[in-house]
Image (cartoon, rainbow over all chains, first blue to last red; front, side):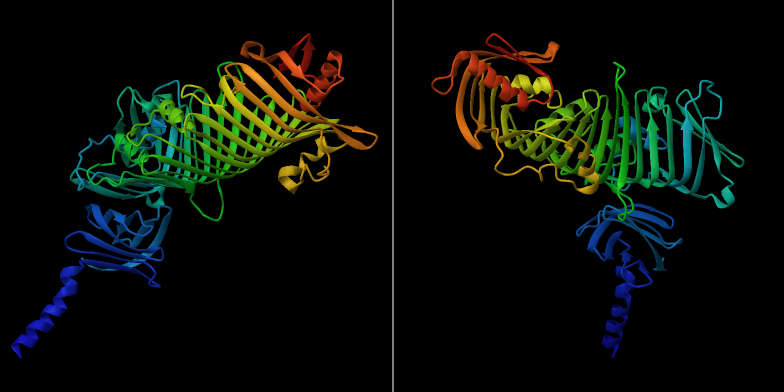
Amino acid sequence: MKVLKLIVLALLMVPALGAEINCTDSIGQYSISVSSNNDVELITPDGSATARLTVRTGSYMSGVASGAKVKSFTLDTEAGILRVFTPRPKTVEVECSGK
Amino acid sequence: MKKLLTTLALMTSFSVAATGNSSNFLEIGITDWNYKKQVDKNAVAGVLNFTDVRMSRSDMAFNLSNKDEIFNANMTYTDGVMGFKAKYMNFNFDMGKENGFNDVVEMGTKKSLAIINPGFFSFGGKNFSIKMDDLRTQLNNFYIFCTANDPDLDMASADGIERGCMTEFFVSPEKAEAPMTMNIQLDYEDGDKMDFTAQLGELDLLGASVFRLNALNSTMTMAPYFMETSNISATCMKDEDQLTFDSEIIKKQCENSVSLEVPKIVLRNKKDETKFYINMKNLEVANGNLYFQAPVIQFVDRESSVTTKDLTVKCQKSEDSVLYDLHSVIKECIESGRINIKSLISRDEENLWFRYEDIMTKGFDPLAHISDKEKTAKRISFQLDQGKALIKASAYKKILGKYARFDVYIKGSVDHRPAKDQIVLNVDEIKVPIGWFKIKWKKFLLGIMKKALVGENIQFNGDRITIQL
C-alpha cells in the first residue's frame, strides 16, 4: 500500500516537476509549457517546437525555437500574451497556470 | 542598411555580452514616432507615442505601460544623445557622437512593434519611413525578422542585429492579406532622380548565403524612362562569412550570382516616344558568364514595331563588370559573346503604341495581332570574339505575295564607343546571294537593320555601320 501511495504521489508530482508554467489559448490551438530547467515546448497550428529561453525577467520571457516553422516566441504570463514568430508574428491571448 | 539597423537599435547602447542567458532586451509598441532633424540642437525634433515598453539591461528590468498617454514624449537629438521628455519621465540614450543616426534627416513609424532580443530582432508595422541626404525609403505593411541561429551571439545590440540580419532575415507583409509596399527615391549627383515602388511578397536570406526575392509588381521612373514589371522572382548569393553589412561587397557578390525571372516588363522612353515589351524567361550570371533568355522582345514607336522571338544571349561576365551598366555589358559581350534570335518581325502599326498602356492593367497581348507566318529575318546569330564579329541571318522579303529567303553572312570588327553611346561595325567581308551588287547589300542591310531598330539610330558610312544607343 505504501508503495502504491508513493507511485501515486510520484505521478502527481511529475507535471509539477516537468512544467513550471503552462499557457493555452481559448481554443487550444496554441500552448506553451516552460519547465523549471527553462526548457520550452510550443504547440502551434504550424507544428510543435522545442525552444530555449534567452530572456526571463519577471512575467516576461522569450526564446529561440527549433523545429517546425516556429523561429522564436515571447510570452508575458501576467498579461496573457503569447507571440509566435514563424517568422511572421502571430499574437495570441493565452491563459497561464503555474508560477 | 547599417545606419538603419543602428537607428532601430538606437535604444540599445548595451554592451555586447556574448552569452545565451543575457537579459538585455527591448520591446516597444509604437503608436507614432516621428523625427525631423533640427538646426537648433535643443529644439524639439519629434514625438514618441507608445503603448508599452519592456526593457532590461543587465539585472535591471522594467515595464512601462503608457496608460492615458501620460508618457507621450517630445524628442530631442543633441550631439549623439537622443532624449525623450514627457511630463513624468525623462530618458536619454547616448549613442556616441559618431553614429549613423547623424545622417538621418527624417524618420517615422506608425503602429509598429520592435523587439530587440538576445535571440532575434523583429520589427513590423503599418509604416516606416526614413530620409537621408539623397535617399528616401518608405515601407507600408512591413515586417522584418532576423536571427543568427547562434546561441553564443547576443543580438541585443546594433552589432548583434547586423550579424543576425546577415545570417538569416525575412522580410514580408506584416498582414498576409495585403502586400508590403516599398518606395525608394534616390537623388543622383548629376541631378537625375530615381523613384522605385514595389509590392513585395517576400525577401529573405537563408543560411547566411542565399537571397530570395518575390515581388508582385514594381514601377520605376528614371527620366526619360518609366518601367513596369510583374511577378519578379530573383535569387543571388553572398559569401556566408560576410556577416557585416558592406553594401558594395554584397551588391557585387549578388550581381555575380544572380538569377532573375520577370515575365513582363514594359518600358517607356518618354523622350523619343518609344516603348518596349520584354517577356523575360531568365537572366543569370554563373561561372563567369551572363545568360539571358527572352521569348519575346518588342520595340514600338507610333508607326511601327519590331518583335524578336526566342532571343538568347551568352556573354562573358568578369567579376568587376557591372550588370546594370549597359556599356559594361556590351564591352563584355564584344570580348566574348553569342547572341541568337530565332525570328524577327518588323511591321507597320496603327495603334499598338497606344495599346501598350493595357499590357499591365488589362492583360493586353502585344503579339496577338501578329501572324505566326510573318517574318522579316530568321536564325540571326552574332558571334563575337575579341572585337571580331560574325553575323549570319536569313532575311525574308515578300515578292509577289510569297516570301523569298536571302542568306546573309557578314564578317567585321566591332568598335565600342561608350563616351558617344555608339557601337560601330566595320564590315570586312560579306557574302550575299549570287548576282547582288555591293550597293544592293548595303541597301538591303540598311533596310533590315533599320527595321530591326526602331527610330533613326543607325547610319551607313562606307563599310561602316554606326548604331547610336
